[in-house]
Length: 531
Image (cartoon, rainbow, N blue to C red; front, side, top):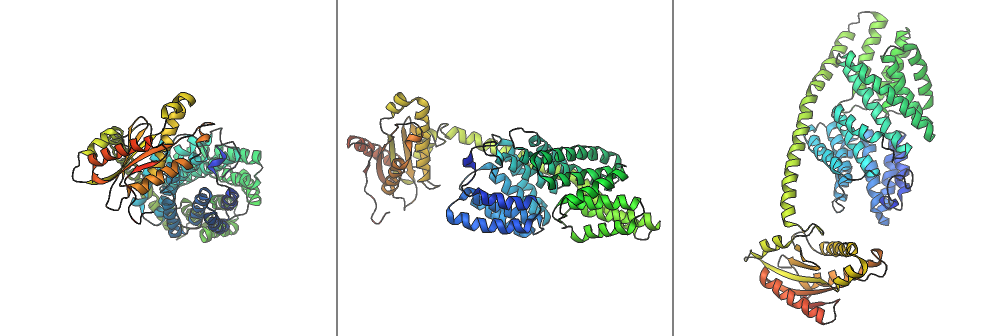
C-alpha cells in the first residue's frame, strides 16, 4: 500500500482504489483480522467490477493473510490459490513469491509440510533474484520470512528480515512493520531454545529481541503509532522477565498491556500475558498468574507449531511448582512440552537441508532452461531468433499459417529519434505480436525491423491475426516513447503450408503491402466466418 507517496516506487505500482487496500491492511496490522477479511472481500468485489487489478490482488492477499491469522488455514490456502491464478497473466515474480509464501504458511498449519517446502524454495529464489527495492520487494521478502518462521527455520527467516530492516528508502512506518516481525522472531527463537533446555543459547536471542523491541518503540514513537509502541514494550518486558529483571519486567508489562488491546491474533498479546504471569508468580501472586496463563491457553489459535502455546503450558507447570512445590502434573507437563519441541528442533536441520536441496534443484533447472532459451532467443525483444526459426523450418511434417511483419521506415526512427527509441519501438512491437498470438504459435524476430509469426493448428487464421496486429500497432501511444513519433507496420499473410513455403509467400505478400502504401495487410484473405 502507498504508505508514503514517492518514498518507495512510482504511484503506478498501486491501483486507483488503493485506499480500499489501505483500509483492510490497517485492520490486519492492528489485529482486527475479521474486519480485515470483511473489508478485503468487499473491496475485492468493487475493484473487480471497476477493473482495478492492482488493488484487487492486494486485497486478495490481505484476505488470505488475515484468514491465516484467524486460524482459518483452509480458507487462506484457497485465497492463495485464487491469487496465484490471478497472477498468471502478469508474470510478476515478487507477487508470485508473496502468494507462494501465503500458500506455504497455510499448508504448514494444515500439516502439508512437503508441499510448503516446495512453495518456499521457489518463493525464496524469486525474492533473491528480484531487482529493485520497492514496496513489493519488501512485502515479498517479509512474506517468505514469515513462512520460514512457521517452519521453525529461524536462521533464514531472520536473514531475510535483517536484509530489509535497515533499508533507508522505505518509510519509517514500513520499517516499523519489519522490525516488529523481527523482534517477535527473536523472542520466539529464544523462548523455544529455553523450552528445549538451552537457556544459555536462549539469552543471546533474548538480547537481540530486546534491542529490536527498543528499536520498534523508537520507530513507533517517530511515526505516532502508540499501539505498536506498547507492543514493543510487551516484547521488552517479556525479555526482561526471562533474563532476571522481574520487578522491572512487571512494571513494563503492565504499562504495555494498558497501551494496546489484547487481541488473540497478536503474538504480543500472548508474550505479554506469559511474561506478566511469570513475574507475578515469582512474587507469590499465583492465582492472578494462573488466570493469565489460562487466558493464553484458551485464546491462542493453535497452529501446526506454536511456541507461545508451548510456553504457556510450561509456565503453568512452573506456577504450579512455585505455588505447591512438587506437583503431580507439573513434571509430566514440562516433560511433554520439552519432548515435543525437542523433536521439532531436531527436525529443523533436516528441513533446512531439504529447503536447500529444493533450491539447488530449482537453480540447476533454471540455469539449464536459461542457457537453452538464450541460444534460441533474441536478446532485445525476448522473441525467438533465426536459430529457432531454422528448427521450425526443418519440420516439413507440420503446416503453418504465416505472417511477415516489417516496421515501416524504421531507419528514420533511428536517425530522427535515436537508436534507444528504435530499440524501444522494436520491444513494443514485439509485445503487440506476443499479445495477439497463442502459446503454441512461433513468434520470431527475423532480423532488424522484421518479424515472423508462424501460426500452428488447423483453426489458425493468419489474416485475422494480422489484422489484429495492425490494429494493435495503430492503437499504441507511440508519442509516449518520443514526441512526434509515429510507427506503422506492413504485414504479409500466407495460408497454411509447410513452414518454409508459408514464410516465402508471406515475405512476398509483405513486399506487396509496402508497395501498396504501407500500414496495411496484404496476402491471403481471412477465412470465411473469421472474426
